[in-house]
Image (cartoon, rainbow, N blue to C red; front, side, top):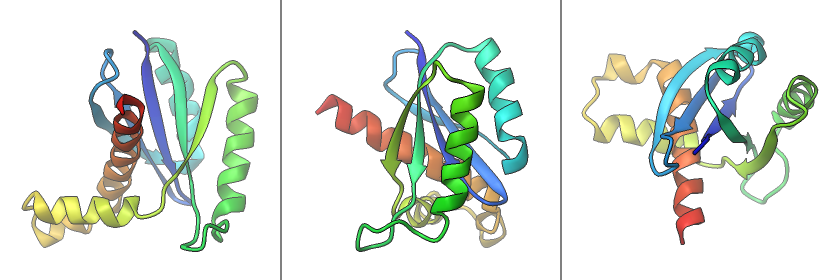
Amino acid sequence: MPRILSIDYGMKRTGIAVTDILQIIASGLTTVPSDTAIAFLKDYFSKEDVIKVLIGEPKQMNGQPSESTPIIEKFVSDFKIAFPEMKIERVDERFTSKMAFQTMIDSGLKKKQRKNKALVDEIAATILLQEYLTRKMI
């Protein structure tokens, strides 16, 4: 079975997570500089079979688009040009960064390790993907 990949796109860094081939478990893949995300994905897609990409959709508490929405919409547009055949699903990413930070605390990571924003982005992408998988199974 092909994998599902999730993207937590940000102004500086992009967290990426991917499922196993059975689409049961989400695992953090990496964090890349946002300006290299498309190039990284081109290389990854050439090596791995991916059926769908989830891209986080930032929203405010009231459901309205957040201030980072235009940046992410530009990425989505660029992604569609680079990968016209790839299925994209937008998913609400509210709280994923906070949940990622709490996961780091719960995992016993030291304060210095929790300051690693790249790790936060990768964990956020993993949470986004695991929540999607859980909803899909229900």
